[in-house]
Image (cartoon, rainbow, N blue to C red; front, side, top):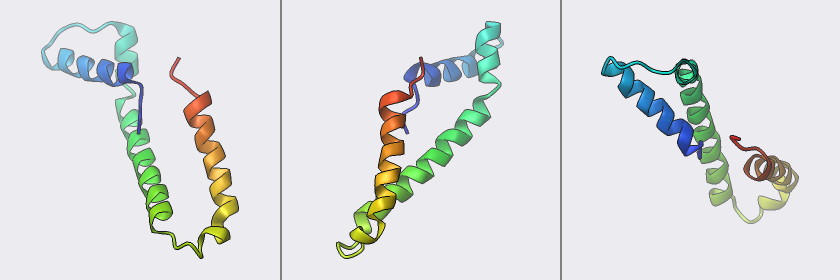
Length: 88
């Protein structure tokens, strides 16, 4: 799963600042307080992506027509997440 590298870097840096006993700006600390939520998102999305890819890779040619409509719906949702949604 591709989270914004700036967010990942911020979370990592805040963690090490706190471990070193350094002060952290309030805005960064507010985001860091949600680190477990972000980890859960990443974990859940990794599982979803792995399952989706496994289904596509292991599906028999005869099975493809049976789930074609569902794959189209999923692909549209994924395209929106890739092309439309962003971290800005």
